[in-house]
Image (cartoon, rainbow, N blue to C red; front, side, top):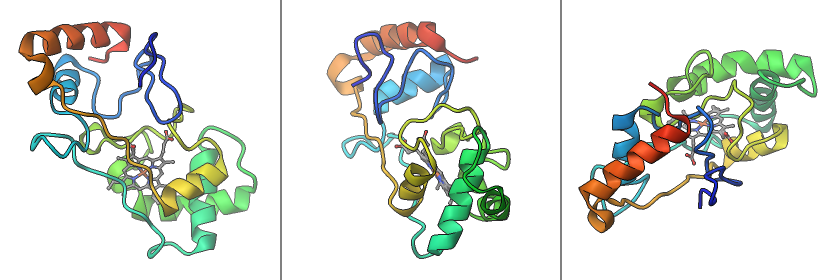
Length: 164
Ligand code: HEC
């Protein structure tokens, strides 16, 4: 899934960069490998997920918040829309993605201000994510690989682009 060079692909994170959904220090990487992401068979798996906003934001508001998010790293299609989206972002998105949109590892919510896109490159794609979020899933490996192998993998993955 992450590619033989660990550089990822659409919907699958690049493990070489320094951008981490669930934290990039050794303990965080080990927990992710051992328990997986939204994996039914493991009670310690990372469970948080982005809710759909179709009942919360109308189509115009969805456009506005998408323009705001895209505008953090790119030129938005319409600066007026982006400006109107800022308050919507603070009210609806900042709890997980942070007031500064730099993400929160405890929520698995990605940094939206770094121009690294897992699935939502462009305003239309962001609107789709807000209306019908995609949730990445990864199996838990602790039971299959054992502690020693999980630790070895943790050190390897951390060496590719770990955080502190
Ligand atoms: C309950 C927490 C939560 C809230 C609230 C939330 N998100 Fe998310 N968001 C996430 C998670 C978790 C992911 C990563 C999904 C995955 O891992 O597959 C994500 C992913 C995204 C992505 C994809 C990023 C990429 O790299 O492709 C975008 C864009 C996004 N969110 C925008 C928003 C916007 C805009 C709002 C507010 C309208 C919002 N989110 C509210 C948790 C949240």
